[in-house]
Image (cartoon, rainbow, N blue to C red; front, side):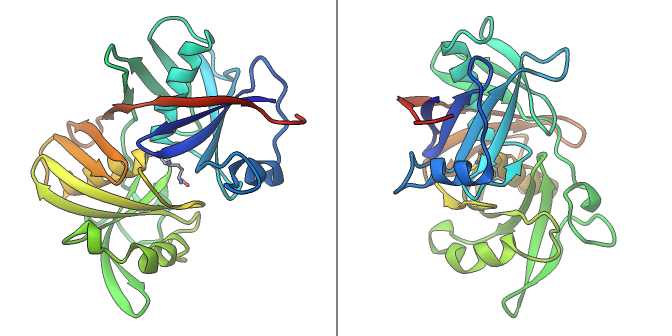
Length: 275
Ligand SMILES: N[C@H](CCC[C@H](N)C(=O)O)C(=O)O
């Protein structure tokens, strides 16, 4: 089975063409592909498939390193867009990618960056999903004997966003797994640690559901932007500085999509023995 190793700000992927080759991936195989000692190594495995929706060009499926299939991946959809274009699987530099969340409309820019319409965030607890009686800007969450104040946002996948003074000293290792597994999130959750620098700049670290801390998280950056803007801390354009680099985001407010622009890089191609 042919694959391409790719990365977006250090969030890395094994990308597989499931259109021109038959691909049969089970949980064990996903985990082996993602394993950084016994496999190729990546945060997520992305599989391009023929679309099941007539208006879409391609469908893409996303699997975390632990083998779980998830609804969306922001850095991944930029990398997939570059992959589809370079493999000649789509026409032109602007096309639609079907995800289990909203369709992602992507545009390949001349400078090698990719702009993506990441769809509109969902803020109702039931849509995240998050157990809360009613929608609030911030929710108390009891973790490890302390009560955190978190924002809860879905970009198709669930995010909890905690504001911190300084991401460099944020307790990501300690609180990340506890938030990820918290019972108030029935599908678990990605845990973002957001430092608002000013109304146009934020810093972010993300302990990703099913992976652990990654160098960058595209949907996490979108969720942090939404959380910051709903709290009145950010304007409608922001630069998000993650460990692996920067994303530019734009969100005009509720009901509107989040636009994300960032890099996508193909690292190498390989052949995996067997299907
Ligand atoms: N770990 C995420 C999926 C990948 C998201 C991230 N890599 C991104 O760039 O959005 C989840 O379980 O929802």
